[in-house]
Length: 258
Image (cartoon, rainbow, N blue to C red; front, side, top):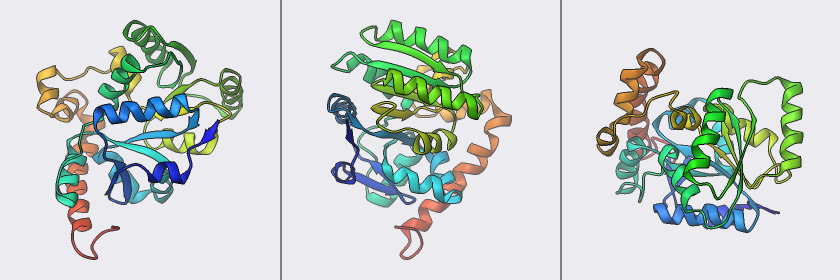
């Protein structure tokens, strides 16, 4: 298995968003990239960048550092606004994981073994059922929920080493999932570890998605805030202005990390 070398990552077109290189790829280009990593058995960490994640990098230097070894895909209207302000145009595609990852599974050229780790057991097992119906050409394996101790963690890693799936979806929330991938996973465990956040909860129906019309208007974050105001108040009501302020700081000469 090939490592995801700095040279490989350097070939990707990226745009700096608050210090993180975010891949500027079209939808099909991103699908082709993941297909290529799997077919070449090139160990490649994959994550997503939205306004909330970008805010977290400002206060968590280790999280910011490890993302430089990930292929980071743009997720949401916030990073599109940032890209327009900082680089003159929005990203070529909104590669939000909730829509992009299932579509990639449908379109992936080669049958894969896909392992699921994280969220609640109920959500993860329901996600296995959902993905099996959506893209039955692949094999889906539930590994463990997202609640485990150090002893269970060693068993999880041993199970992954024995299975060695093509893809591992890690759903533990940000930044825990990215830090866990960076700290524990190598090419001995899987080819493509992908930090998928709330994906299992969303596809299982445990957390409702906004109506399609709201999603098309790119206002799903407003719907989620209305559904979970207590949990998401800080992320959206306080976080969005903070993110835009940081973007403007980056835009000013000597004002940001660019």
